[in-house]
Length: 174
Image (cartoon, rainbow, N blue to C red; front, side):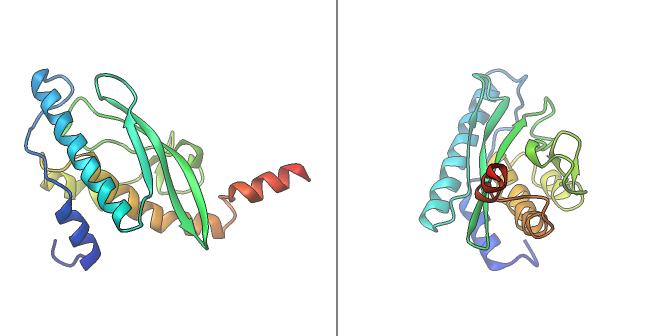
């Protein structure tokens, strides 16, 4: 964590590290891993709420815990921009990080792959690999999606690629 800003360090140290190295094909071990994932997500969400920094909601979309869906949002110039969030847990998890998707932003930035998968290769994937299996979904959101939103959304808004829902509604009425 050398060279990290104090807020990121503080946040990261409060997200529980995971101990079970198991993926979706590992039966009871995967169930244990999911319990750890939920504990880390709950801790991260509670910390965000207590710091008035609530910015996402996700939940498992299937009983196996391999498909996750929800919403994330970013506030820019006092306006809240909300996006659908989805991802699948890869069969090679936790060795491979999930690919986080924001489908409605597909094609709007070069820092995204087909289907709305955000680009995390340069900065996040080496960090994930170094911390496997201790990192989980909460860490991917904290160290992957949050910085991506902070870097990309202001540029997308300022360039007109992303419009606030109120602006989009008023232009549709015209």
